[in-house]
Amino acid sequence: MADIERRLRRARYINELFPMDRRVFRDRTNPLETLSPMEIRERYRFFPETILFLVNMLNLERATERSCPLPPLISTLAALHFLATGTHHIVTAGLHGISRSSVSRAVKQFTDSVSPKWFQAPSANEDDYVNKKGFHSLNVQMICDATFRFVDVVAKWPASVHDSRIFRESAIRQRFERGEIDGLLLGDSGYGCKRYLMTPYQNTDSPCKV
Image (cartoon, rainbow, N blue to C red; front, top):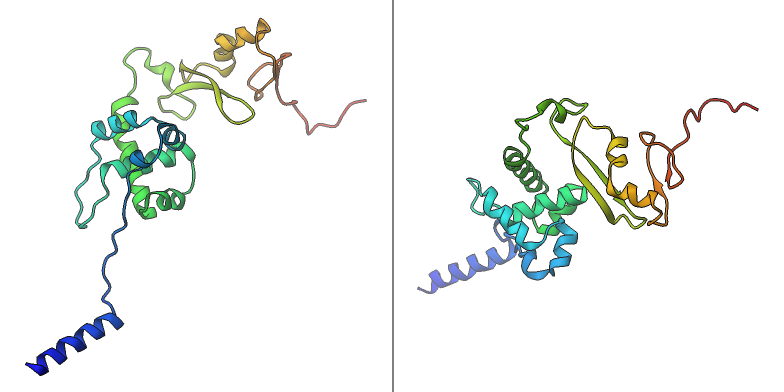
């Protein structure tokens, strides 16, 4: 009996000195319970109720041979954070306590699940929604202020509609025309230069004529 006890003590001592390679499971906290609604919206661009709606609707739980699959909520949050911020996978991975490969799979699974539900080609005037790259989309006009906060969004025009027409028929353009907004807009060469809309100079590489 004494010999057996010595062997057990020796085995425990060896295990303490040279621990076996065990899989480490990180604590995946739920940001929806630790952050305020505004903090969640800032990080993921959606309020908690909308995020939970997406989780329940998309059902991103997938079969895996691993003993600890990525929960649907964490998978959705990782995808939303990457899409909202455009940051590197390693940043999103560190924020949610998962690997970069898990972020990559989460983003692909999320976009593959969303596309069939909301980005289908329209049945009426289908050709109008085909953009220059050959797939269906909307032409969205978005205006932000100097702090990169969006102040106006127009998301109702097919991809074939030119940017200048969208702005010409927008409500914010009418407000500028009436002098209700004191400020300047910066636009690209697709817009016409106006007293409130500054656009780039054309042919800047050509020599100046005196």
